[in-house]
Image 1 (spheres, one colour):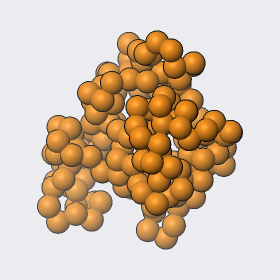
Image 2 (cartoon, helix red, strand yellow):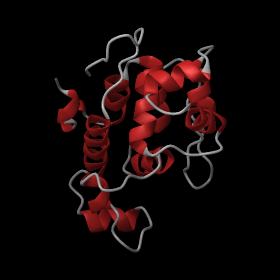
Image 3 (tube, one colour):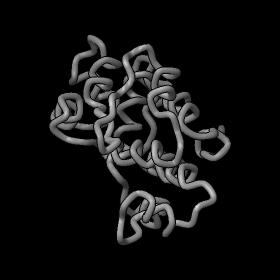
Length: 169
């Protein structure tokens, strides 16, 4: 992923690329199922999958991980393979609590520095880290990339990296 100069290690990518990556990951999670069948499997009456895959709207990262779990991805193992921080725990509805995990990978980096690397406000970053707000999938990817510089590794732990052409380069 192309790093912007002056960001001390973490690679920050542009919004359009993050949106493409998110759409490609969601498409990879769907696999060979039809969009309608995948939407029904996730419990939707309508079909948000088309909007997700075309980048018009995105689920929260929590909802995307729930979809990954339902699609057969071992989400906890993927996170464990990616980082030493304890993987996110899921509740009874298969919703993963990302705030403690994001806070753990942040370590001692000040929120303002993490937000600057991610290209978001420190208020948004603080809400995501505390669990007050749930980032959309592209914003979650932006956070992970800013905090670790290793977004392709997390994506590869979740889906086959070949299914995400935006990260192959």
